[in-house]
Image (cartoon, rainbow, N blue to C red; front, side):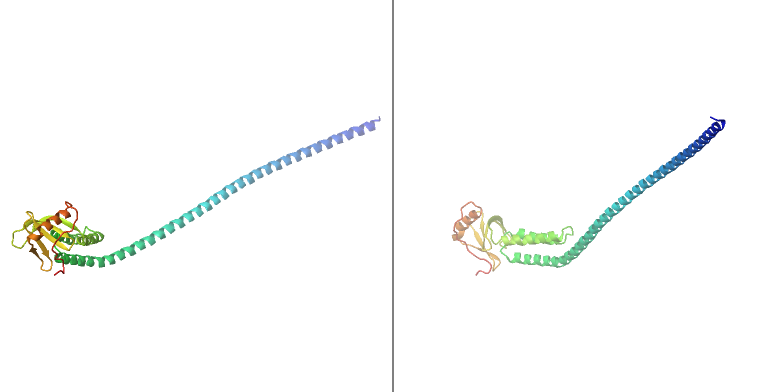
Length: 256
């Protein structure tokens, strides 16, 4: 090989080496640039991921806030309905109280009238258990003046007194008491009454007997012919004898 050829080969080799070196440098630079871009891209992706996560958290917070707001709104609606219902109940109670006050205004005078009527009736009726009946009426008057007794309780007691008076029309009973004949010397006797049909009294020694005449408002003494029948009637009323027919004088209200 000639010297020229060798020089050409050397020159070509040098050129090739230089070219390869230059290409290697470019590749290295390219790789570095790619690595830088990748790192920048990864960094950007991390930022994006962080932003996405923050966005999701904000979205979740928003949804929770919306849900809580809806729940609160529903609860507020519920509370408002309860308040409205309570207001309606209060108004209803106020109306009822006003109505009760009006009823009281009518009932109280009625009760006084009922007591007055009952007192008149007792004073004109057959005097069965007269003392206890008159005491009951006096107690009613005291109750009407007692501020500690409610109107409803006062009315109940008045009605109860009427019911007790009504029961005297059907009771067959005997009891012991004092008979006042108007001479200032009361006599202890056995009384027996058959409703309001007959009221008879007999002395404890069985020797004397009287019958109440409601027309004359007085006691009339009976003859000896009634003594045995009156004694038996008293015993029947006390359940000491079985019920049977008996003979009694009758001086009921309105009888002649």
